[in-house]
Image (cartoon, rainbow, N blue to C red):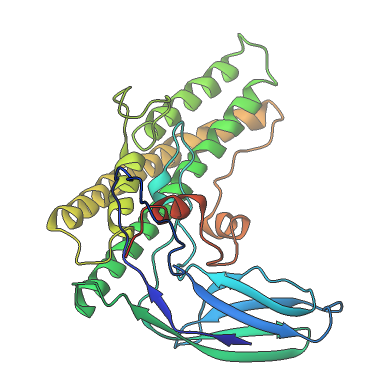
Length: 308
């Protein structure tokens, strides 16, 4: 098991018109490269490769090959991306996680009961003009945004679960039943709250329906694809969206506190099961996954424009 120092190359974007003497060559790797040798194919037990920070926390898990001989895998030097609230439009800016800070990490290979480790040095691109303090400020804001996006995803999926339960119970009753009408009205009320968070029509800017989700993922994308000190505007927008989302959460909590007991009482009279809120622990367990991994398609798209 062996790794070489990995340089976190700065992102370059642009376009150019090639001439008749164009030279095309491969860029240096933008990921950490890890090489390992297996005398024979791994058959029994697990085989996994994790990357740990100086505190021993797993910050990346890398898909590994079990074949014999030399194997080479890469790590994007990023933590896992945020869980994005479901909506009508894609959030490309939030498809990758924050880049880890430069420093010394450990690569740990677990082969059944055997464990092998090797250090991995992550280095800042020598062309970068920002300081270590600027880089830390960027990393902290990226993680704050990531946390807020994930919290937002929980809130939206909570609302979706409530709406789904309301609609499902209403479908079991006659269309003109008073309780069914009450359930459908409650579903519409929750949807009104949800529409404060996410766009429900495709088109984004075209429809003019960008909401908190679209705004926060836009800020996140601007921060996560640059590693210098974030602008004051980015900091201010982050704080403003955080406050607005807190207001929406309070509105939803007030609705559930006021309306859900009466709804469940009406459901009991119809011999229908009550509606329960999904807890954060339940949501976290359903969305649990390993961190890090290989670069995503979006990150690869940005790498097309990297040049020395």
